[in-house]
Image (cartoon, rainbow, N blue to C red):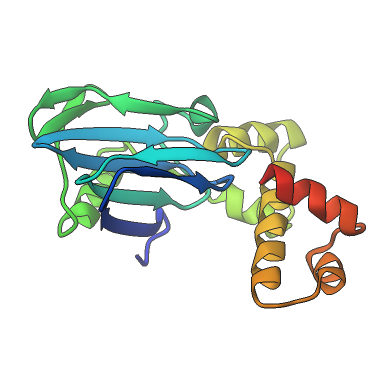
Length: 201
């Protein structure tokens, strides 16, 4: 999706009961689940460590992964860190969000749903986040930068950079890059340093 607010939208259906390992995640998501005629909307925050996620057969799911810097002003991302919040149901096909009812979106209209969130000021984007991650100087105090960064992402700059480095290392290893070359290219001090981060993520 070509949007400053959303990184990806994914649609899928579970084919069986089970569980899988989910990696650490620096982005937050809105997850829309349909199962046995019922709907559920979840705001899932950033996760600093890996873990196990369980799922049930027959669920239809839409995952909206938001860009770093996208957040809900009434529910800053820092409050979602390491957690998920189920939004209250209003009816079988609608839910409550920021004092209003919203129709449960489907894959065909979920982009329109996101646009409405933006127009109603339920969803915002702070361009400071990308500027900071690109090392562009800011004409404000470091305390203000840190506060806005935490509010929009739920994480510190250091946590996000470390997570991005871990993902870079994983991609290199999957491409067949040697461990020593991966250590060098991803910016780790040595192999034990890389190993420690991979265990955490």
